[in-house]
Amino acid sequence: MESTSKIFIICIMSMLSLKGYSQGCPTSGYPSFYSCSDIAQFVIDYPGCNRLPSTLRLPYGGVSNLAGFPGLAQLDSISGSLICDECDLSSLVGLENLNYVGGSVTIDEPHGTLVNLQGLNNLSYIGGGFNLYECSDLVSTNGLDNLLYIGDRIWLLDNTVLSQITGFENISHLPGQFWFDEMDAMIDLSGFDSLITIGGYVRIWDNALLNSLGGFNKIELIGGYLDIAYNDMLIQLDALDNLNTVGNDLHVRENETLDNIEGLSSLVNFNGEILVYQNSLLTNLDGIENIAADSITNLILGECDSLSICSQPNICQYLINSMGPSTINLNNSGCNSIPEITAACAAIGVDEINLGEKFSIYPNPITDATILKSEIIKSGAIVHFYNYRGDLVKSVYGLDSNQILIDRTGLSEGLYLLRIVQDNEVIGAVKIVVII
Image 1 (cartoon, one colour):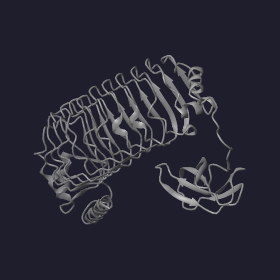
Image 2 (image 1 turned 120 degrees about the vertical axis):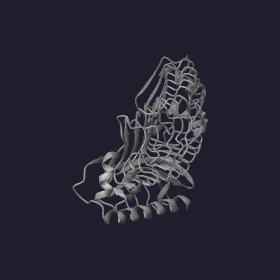
Image 3 (image 1 turned 180 degrees about the horizontal axis):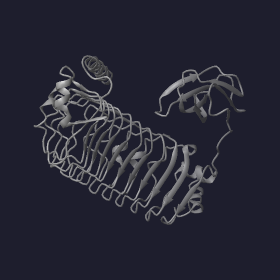
Image 4 (image 1 turned 60 degrees about the vertical axis):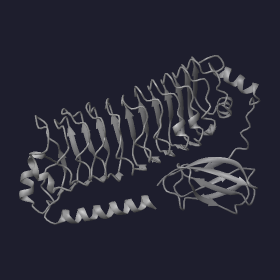
């Protein structure tokens, strides 16, 4: 309810800004971007306009602050993006009245000594992404006091002294990607403690001191792939123990001190490749045991010097039944080849995996309707439909025997897992893709 209220407030704020925009603001003939030196003339030409109709580029070329551009105080919103591209600023003070940016906020390799984001204190809405690249003096994101919404991604790349992340306390759902690369002063992901879902892919790469993913403790869903790589001090993934959905590939690679991945044990909704590569201290695959074998599209286990136990039941099922491509090599004895793993599966009594009766579904993908068939379906079976988040979105009851007609009513475009329940027991699962 609280999140819904915030979005409602933002929508009202946006409508009010648009109303102001229509009263005395340019509607055509304006440039694709304004520099700060253009703003003085803008406020003369449009004295009642508080919304810049396109992008604002912050100054470079020896201008270290915004004190020389008092016209910026007239602006409370920018239709386009706010961009510092190699700007010479040492402070963003002067933008205090800004509350709305329709596009992205990007600070890319500032040449001034920008140490924080003071000046953006009233910014509440970013329609695009929030991007910080190569900010060599940025120590803190302090200054994002009122941020309520980001409409796309968060990219934090090569900010080598950034050690304090604040301002994202109200961001629980990020529609786009999350990249966290070369953040060499960060020991965890503190500052993103409110995030629950990330709609795009997540990349956590090459962070010299990162030893845990603390700060991601509430994450339940990642819509794209999850790629954790080149983090030399990362020990475990325990902060991900609420993560239940990854919409695409899972890559865990070249993390020299990672000794377990048990924090992934809640991951049940998955569809993609599993790659575990060059994690020299990892001894087993505990943590991925709840991923269904038929959700794996490719399996790569390679160059993990200590990896000797790979006989998770789902891995056994995937390999023994040749459910997809696999590459297994250069690990420790017991997990160094497909025959070694399948032999270990046999030793623990998983030498014969019963896939159960086959279910067929045609057509798939579906546009209007499809038919699910199986000899074991009886009258009274129930089919439950789960979306990529793991949410139950539809159930079909009172079905005829042997085959079930399924229509797309109530299903938006996307991937769904169908679980067939009979006599209070799940007897099978299939995936369907709904297209327009």
